[in-house]
Length: 218
Image 1 (cartoon, rainbow, N blue to C red):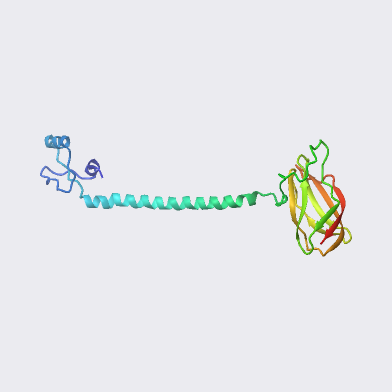
Image 2 (image 1 turned 120 degrees about the vertical axis):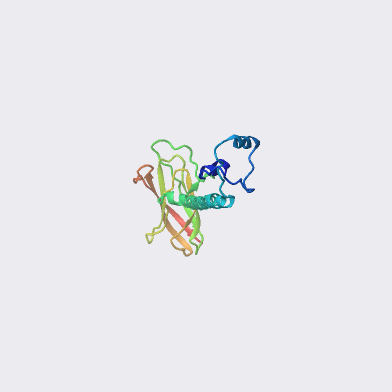
């Protein structure tokens, strides 16, 4: 605490004040000369130890407490931000968009530029799946430039069983691996591949495409 602050908190002393003890900080030469010529009584400074304990100590405790609380708040905000950052993509993900749809960087299906009013879709004739496996490989693209989403549906014609239904596939995306509803036994199957299309804005149903294919399971 500065000397002037200490003087402001003390009561004036009479003219016979005791000399300042050795614990006070020495004044510079200019201050000594002014005090010597001043006729007003010299106020006695407060003891150094109580002043530090009562003010500096309390101030440090409060400041440290605020710093600790502030650090905890910042830490919580950082942790919350990291957690929210990791969860945000999942929270913002469109549940109708197939999570397995990825960019068609390999151009699995490139039929050229889509002309206005037309929808391009791949053609299928023969498909092969491994026997006893649910996870199989097949290329299901939605060509870049199409004015709609695609949804692929795989149906076994003899039983009418749907063994796979995709989510929505945006234009320029492709699915290269699917999970069937159940493993298939070895054999030859007549399968129908349906391509359902949906408007990009309202997602209302548009024209559909149906293809008959030969499915070999082996």
